[in-house]
Structure formats: C-alpha cells, structure tokens
Length: 86
Image 1 (spheres, rainbow, N blue to C red):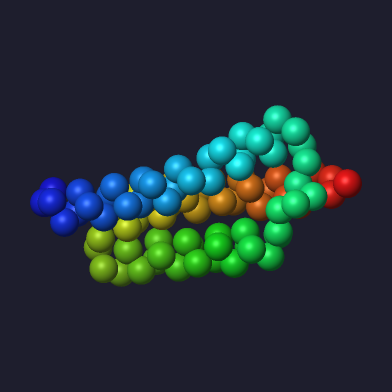
Image 2 (cartoon, one colour):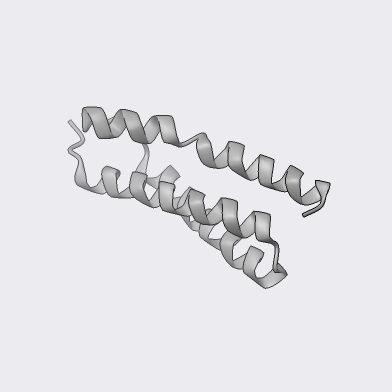
C-alpha cells in the first residue's frame, strides 16, 4: 500500500467514524426526532454507490471505508425506521 492509498484510507476512516457518536446516542436514548430519514437515506445510497465505484476501480481504500460506512449508515436508517419520532 502506497502513501496515496494511506491518505485515502485515513480520509475514509474519518468519514466512517463520524456517524458513530450519533448511532450511540440514538441507541441509548431511542429518540430520533431531530434526525432526518431523507438525509440518512440519501447518504446511505451515495455510500453504496461509492462501494460499487470502488469495486469497479479495484480501489481497496474506497471499498473498505465505504463498506464499513454503509453498514453504519444502514444501522442508523434502521433506528430511524424503528424508533419512535416523539
């Protein structure tokens, strides 16, 4: 892995980790009133497209970081669909 791949992987890690505090907060409180399903839905679709792009380009940092991000965003979408909007 060269330094360019490492930069890509670092960027992917930062973006991927950014959603974890929100997931933890929602998981603990079960409250999603202030969170937009549309925003997370579009974000999740975009991340899925990035995974496909990474596969087509055989770009490992893009595939890895966006696959993890896709899983995390799907968890958030699940919470948004299953927790009550008070």
